[in-house]
Image (cartoon, rainbow, N blue to C red; front, top):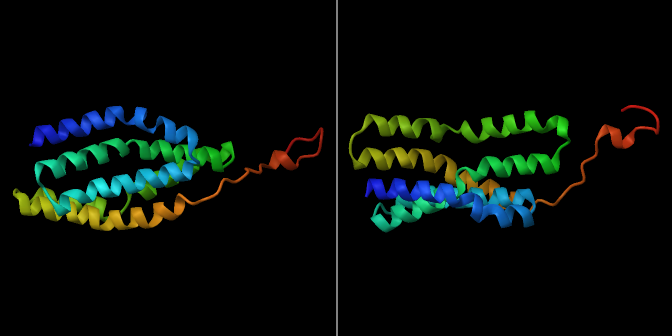
Length: 163
């Protein structure tokens, strides 16, 4: 079961760029990020409901299909929402916020201390309970964000003058 689940996760991760190509080209970046967040949350929460083989495979498929698309969606959102000079700092902030949630740090630590299914379930619950709700709670409204026109200082410069 373990090898099949990890193999499914790997295959889903490798195929994800193909699956996300159309949404990334057609949707506004915030909608893509919202969809990725919801899919990640659902995929991460499935093992809390059931650890049967079909549930674990579905979890691996969903999580694998979205986990590396999240940074891409964030970068797309930053590039379409901010001036080029702000891209680096904005992606850095998104990275810190996305990776620095209490459950993400404490879940694996609690899981490592135990050596049986109860500890695994508690570790997953620690990670998911802190993030799944906040992911869905934040990403769904984010998907309704409207496009904005980026206004840079150079847009207001007088002809012949540098901004």
